[in-house]
Image 1 (cartoon, rainbow, N blue to C red):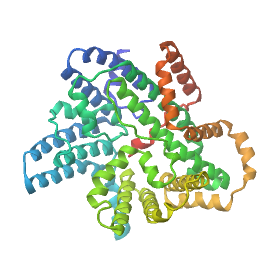
Image 2: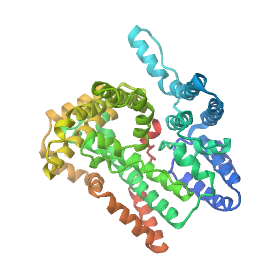
Image 3: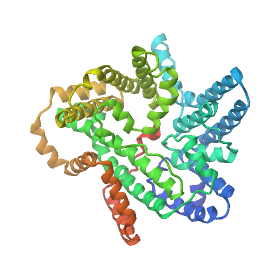
Image 4: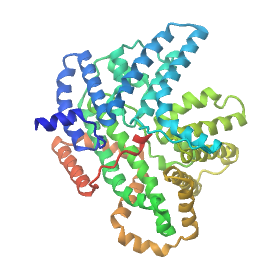
Length: 484
């Protein structure tokens, strides 16, 4: 037992995540001590969470976790130095801080992509470097940048200690895949003795159960079939390819939304309130609405720190279109160093530009149920089309999937498909039907859960855990957005 514990504490773990058993056991031990500490000392509690967060980062990244405290130190002290400056000197320090924050991200994420581009341009034999992308680097880098820029623009003026900043940048629920949290959301809560009440705790449990159902049950189960399709689309019919695209459209939502629910739920158990990151995005009637509902922390980050600085909608119609398109290209590249992500971003950028250009005519169309139905079908289909490029390894795979769908589609495959993949079909149908539920109804369910006796809450938790255990795969599926 002693040897196992020593190995566990000393060795990184590639399966380390919120849905792994080791994390669940360690978190329960951490939480028990946390409850005791927070009643006695704020500074000790913050320090304890920071230490655990760094341990969490080590388990996920190994020695590369040192990038996290290094980024925190550089960002904190350079921002403080910038804040004491005026005029051009202040602006120079802001850009210098942002550049230093970005350097590790640019090296680890984009070096091989640049080498590949140079190799194609020069027809040379440049070889890619052996670089491992640290888990969560994109998310904590963007948090550091938002802090510096907000301080520079005096949108965030609160005095922050080094310990509080370390808490902000290393807070472990946010490390794997965000959501990207602004200083104005997190730091004021830790400045004071934040209150942990029953409603927060039960809301946290509700969100954790919701996240487990989405991620460990639906997303992980349907992922296996989706992977078969995108690994070899020619081995399947057009109907089966379409089901793979539909399955991945649901998988990426349940995977990332499930992660966000668990993350926000864990933070709620600790007394920290984080903002929602998803609001039923597949209910959207246009792409603009989709980006107000999907990965909200990222879309608002790009709006505030890329789109608006480029000029936003303040410099005329054509400049607005260009700013929209460029912002989505950057958002696509943020997801990964691959032309497929750039194409995905370009598709969304073009879609947003087209929607804005058509707005004068669209506003004249009657807002009937028929129009809403057509709008939803078009939006959902376009989003699913874009996900095809996002998921595919290369352009050949994406085009093969789409070619098979449009050239070899037959409804005669429907009955045998459902008979063969009954559970997969039920999970996909269930996931899509959940999007038919209105937000206010989900909120009523949450309040109903909070008001039930603790015995019923415990029974529901065990039921959810048992269902997840029964249907989950033997191998833990990594969170999709952990690679970004």
